Length: 510
Image (cartoon, rainbow, N blue to C red; front, side, top):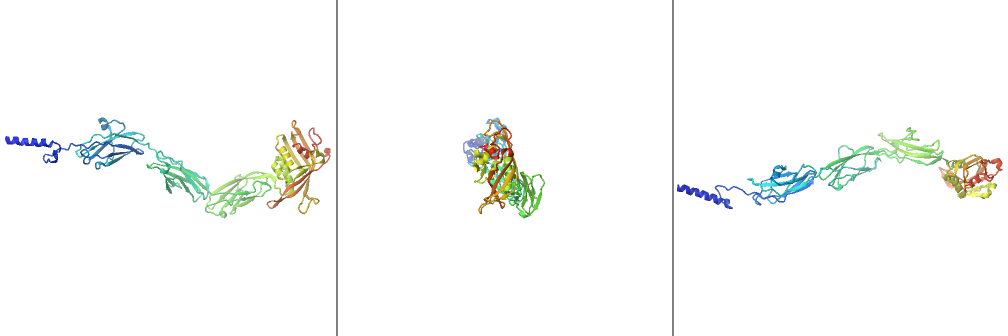
């Protein structure tokens, strides 16, 4: 009995001894239980990194307090900030929780697939191998990013472009919520075949030359630093380059216009291998087809503005067109004295001061009839242009008509010298009609008509000026032949007798 009591006392003493701090370091039987928990994490932080992802960082705790290594973590997330026990129980455990590292090491965890534009609160506990769970860490919060991709956008210049064009592509209109243009990756697919032919990081511009004519669906794909992608597509057209020039333009009546398509280009074929089709009036019907020769000539039957179309076709059947406006004026080339007088009449019909001006040399003179001497003996070139400017451009003249009969061209041997040849033409049946007011009679519209008049013109070649190898002529002198008024002129309305000649009618516009 006494021995039994002594044995029980020894056991009690051993148990009491084991309860003392540090006693278990030397205990063998029985083993002391581990009741020390890891220290609570106090530096948990949450950072938004990319779309729908938050990065958690903290310092790894020890096993017993700060000593040793923890055995596991329990990390949870919630969409409200409460830290009560109920909050922990209602929160959701995150995925891919790491195994604790050595105490003092920096731990990281990427929490993915969060709802964008939502704020999340995070907390964790650490446990040892027992497991003894630490107290709750501090609570860290972060807002998940909106899941936005970059916006791909680009422009191209020129478009369309002729063969051999170096097209310039510019994606500066692209954008991204988080990244600048220099942080994006630009991939270019020139033919739209799904294969990206060029990849450029940080530079939104690129250039490309297409080998063939055609329409190409160029695709740009933009990738941001989070891996977000977007694409844009534009149709880029490369044409054969149809091109032509015309000379002269504008041209006078009876001009043989020369058309030259030597500025045409094709990447594969020579100019001699192209087919040239010409449509002289843009009516959709090609009037001339020439194989291998880029030049052509054509004369238009009437004055007017003509839209001339050239269509070229290469050996592969590719075509391109170009259009130019060609103007044939009513006026004739000033290469004969007769043409000058025709242009004089047309200048009156059209009230065209510039055309009238082109007929006269600097030393021109208009010799007035004797009855018009009150106006002076003659008008010089400056007088003529001033008078006709007032007559042609003034609102006071409502109608103006001129007609006459051309005479023959003869050499004036009396006035011709070795250095200067003068030729003359006399026009008859001159009918000049003007209706309106004049500076002389500004209040009442009058009709002035001179009939059966006679005028004489002298012509000379204009120095060294030539048109297509033909000399340019000018009206050197103009003389008004005088006859009695009652036999040569009828004036409509109550007019003084002095207004019965061409010169006197012109003189009213001084």
